[in-house]
Amino acid sequence: MKKKTIIILSIMLIAIIGITILYFRGNIEYEYVNNEIEPEEEISDDQLRQTMISVYYVDKNSNEIMPEVKIIDAKNLLNNPYEVLINYLLEGPKSENLKKAIPDGVKLNSVNLKSGVLYVDFSKEFIENHPGGEIEESNTIYTIVNTVTELTEVEAVKILIDGEENKCFVDEKMNFSESFVRLK
Image (cartoon, rainbow, N blue to C red; front, top):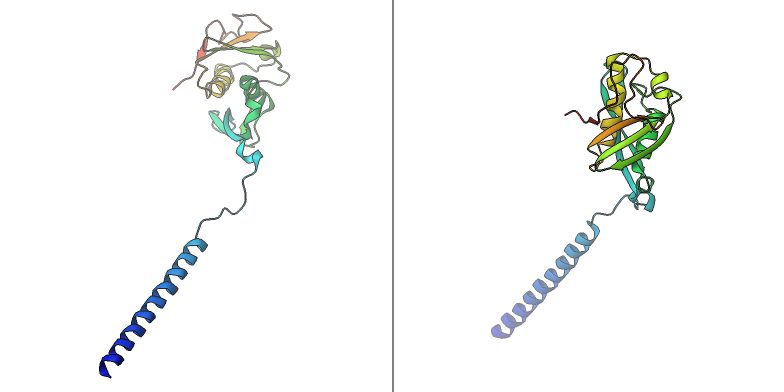
């Protein structure tokens, strides 16, 4: 009788241990499933196409060139990214602490990349409406250069005025005979 009781108690103990293991194993799996990271919101197709670009403007206080990051639809950059970037320069910054360096009234005639050099052709207002001064002229040139050289294929920038090379600003402090490269 003692032997039967020990066997029955052993079987019951094994059964209790087995049921306990199965119960906790099921809960652990359940908790694991419930602890998966779920996004707070689904990412839309529009968000997948967004990219960040840096467009350079002039800081109103320090008069230094500073980038403004813009989030745009990447498909806007497919056809002519250089034109898109120059047009952002012409529009001006969103930040109140920055100002555009390209004078008002300037139109972009064309922009073409040839052998790593980006030829940017502006209307005559680029030089006629410019306030002059070496710092202002340099800022105007390098907001353009820094913005378009964010694209790896652009190594230098050549400024044209109504299709003509070798022009200069009115005070002749800076001329456009050479290509401009990004300053480190």
